[in-house]
Image 1 (cartoon, helix red, strand yellow):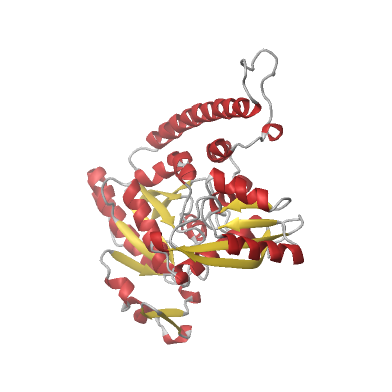
Image 2 (cartoon, rainbow, N blue to C red):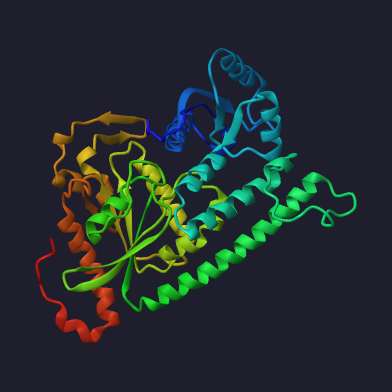
Length: 404
């Protein structure tokens, strides 16, 4: 458990395997493992997990009456601060569940991620993006929350005839959303000018699932001190550094990590951050090969990239954390633990991951293993793009030793 200086809150997690969405029990368990890590990142301790198989969510309460009674019985006997659902709850579901568990906070996955993002936002840009996403999430869920909203306007003369508190709250939030969107548009224009001012240098974007080691690799390649920590969403802001591999300069951008079930509000709010990915010339897709579900994480990232990018970009898949690799997939239902000593770098290169098409490389950013091969592969791709843009610099390309 990470120490935050605050009392650790005790959380119950609730997951549902929905047949309507083809979610298997094993997948649900994987999602709940991730939800537990999210809760830990936010400063909560998971004390109990409840699961249920359903054809589709119960309209009023998401889960069935019997499961709600089980949760109630547990709460009566154990100290509990909050209940976290692994899926997004509708406003009606949230209101009904809160009514059943008075005094207990009820969160869904989206709300939890928003809370983490709010605690991680450091720059004005990130804070504005998160605040916008929070208000967009809150607007349809307003239920008599008048006292929770900060009044930035006086009430006298502004409340229309017959306007209720909830209508006033909605108007205040809509005004805030409009203002935040205007602020983001202004910041986006500034960011666009900054990107144009960088000239025609080749741009490389580090992308990947959250907590796969992007910032650690960024620090290694750029010799800088980007914040890196073993928590989900350790960094929110895009960091750009100018580096050179051999004699070729390039811009390296570290971006926010992706995650399963990423809230729509966050995708919309973080469009400008994702512009670094859209405008990149080369993608470094970082994968935590030590994670038991790394294949599913790769799929999530690839699907997100397919939505973001109109056309495919040159991509190098970087399998990170080979020093912690412990598993090899035998078939669809079997993850057999294998000692790391049984796998040399050559062994890894012969596995199925290297036969999916495209460039691949296996490294450990933390242990600085096989970084030279990564630099060689990146240099080869960047050099071709750079020489096309700056043909008069061709004489510079010569076989030099890679910088240490």
